[in-house]
Image 1 (cartoon, rainbow, N blue to C red):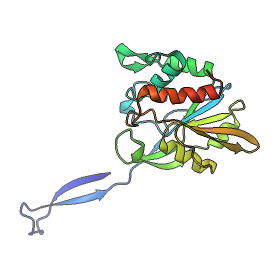
Image 2: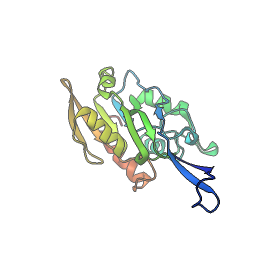
Image 3: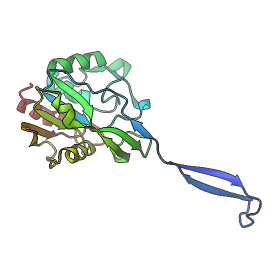
Length: 218
């Protein structure tokens, strides 16, 4: 982060107002993941994003908390044909209790591919996240005995996970196999649920639906 400091300097005659500016480069602090992994014992799928947005953008204390992010609208369409199934419209928040109940019943685990970051700008964009410590996803998966697939929901999440796994990233909407020891698994790559991603909500939901059908979860 750059701070602009204005100071007086009586000996610096070249400046009209007897002032000069010092640019100080302050190293961004490391930000730790604020949430614990959500890992149901019956998980069939591990869903991995990148890292949560700044907390001032949260409307609930859970994953995908930005009300402008469409993940819970996508899953509402996929499983209940209702984009507002997980939305308390009048309050402009997501219904955390409803979401958690659904995830437990469906067998969907959630975390992020990064445990520690430096946020280079104070916004929700992955483009301004510097990865400090990636998540040990293989260790996490070893504790999810019924999980057969992982899905990433954005470019940074995909690139970070593939670097950890030593795998080639699949195309958006596609999947590829990978091995966790002797355990055969699938890696899916879905469109980002961010509204910055140039795809309509219904089209995103259709892509996610294809994955869930493939996994026999709908």
